[in-house]
Length: 498
Image (tube, rainbow, N blue to C red):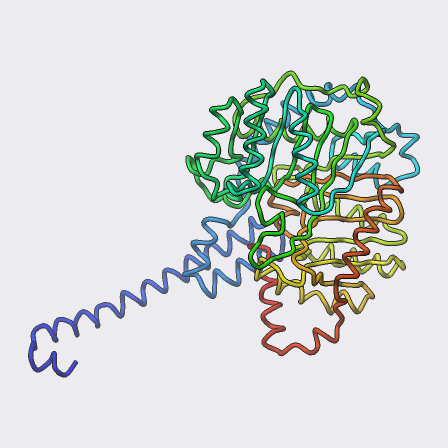
């Protein structure tokens, strides 16, 4: 600045004064920022649902308020009182009607359930009946899943429900749109529901084409019109297709080319889905009707609810229950589901999840199961699409390995499946991950099936996945640098707010 002092002394003097004036302003700015961080950290302690989440917010709000404050204003807190009240009113209106509709379906009697405490518990947790005479079919990976879904859509006669967290306007999405347009023009009622956050890239042309053909299409929250932090944080992560009230599909696949193995990095894409027929389909219609009512204000009528008259070919011998969970539940339904499954295990519990960030209560439940002599196996991907989750998972190695819990990392691509088995006859497939977002923030949908023959197929599938994985032991954790260990533990603290 010497040349400025020589050539332009007045300008130089003004700049010097400005710099001096800015210093106290900058100090005041940072003091206010940290004060706000401290005040909102009090709010985080009061409102955040888990100790993990509260610690993460308190830590970030008080150390990096410039970054954490905007994030907290968008994603933080969990009061959402207006939303909860509105959603609860909707559930109160629809569930009694649904129970009347479901009154004639084939449910499992108390006597038939007496030997299975897990299914009994899940029926009470879900508030939907445990059904019998269902037929379950395991679908492995995207190509087989969408081949089956598209076949059901092409043969629809009355109505189609389509609900996905992600719908893309790519090759797979356009193929689905074309089929739905064809059915809508034939007079089949078509309802498409998608999450506005997950389907952020879905263009208006996609939905306009469907509407012009007569289909009804809606985002779950409609972020474009009324964006707020609750809408961003509470996402509808469900994946469901129902055709004519007779056939349903539930699982981990969304509508996008990456689910067919076309992701540029995460390839091959490994996923699992379930095709199911029988009385359980009526139960699966209930969360869709509830979600549609919430999103649009409309109640869908003229649906098939009584499957006693359905062709015998759709009947099987599986008992099944639908677990629909979400942040408006009076209790944490998804968390209760995982706890119930872990505590019921006597021989084995295998869990496949892409996002493994359990809270301490679930870690303790897994450790206790291992202490009982239960074989506990957990399958996660070796490479992940989420930095926080990928690094968080490593921080659990020591706690799991010391108790004999086997943690495997899938090495043949990206394992996105959400599958759980207990002992010799219980299997569950759905959309719920083993992390805070699924446990407490997202709307999720899982179908639990009691059927030894079906579980043989699921076990065979998972056994192959384990063979394509590597066992992670405490040696791997101990070999990490101190910096890598610290990174994993910090990511674990922050993961509940991701």
